[in-house]
Image (cartoon, rainbow, N blue to C red):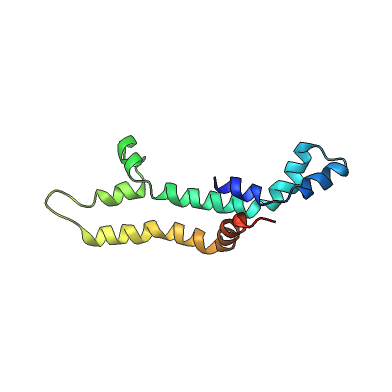
Length: 122
């Protein structure tokens, strides 16, 4: 639904102009729409990654071996029945938050452009 509003904001005159120049529908998609939709695609990909990074419940259910566990499940295992290792939980939380923070900082331009330009109609 994010990309639908983004593609809906792109004017149809680009497609008509490309068709007059002899482009078929695939060429219009590849050379016109995809480059114009790059910020929206990047924002959707980044937000999907950030949501998947924080998925706890599914990874808790479907992982059984130590090598397959995600970082959120490993952090949850630091709290036992009679003892909670708060230092390890805090350290794991800081380490787990580094990749999303770095991705957000590096791709902030695409996130802002992708989320704001889809709502503007010409």
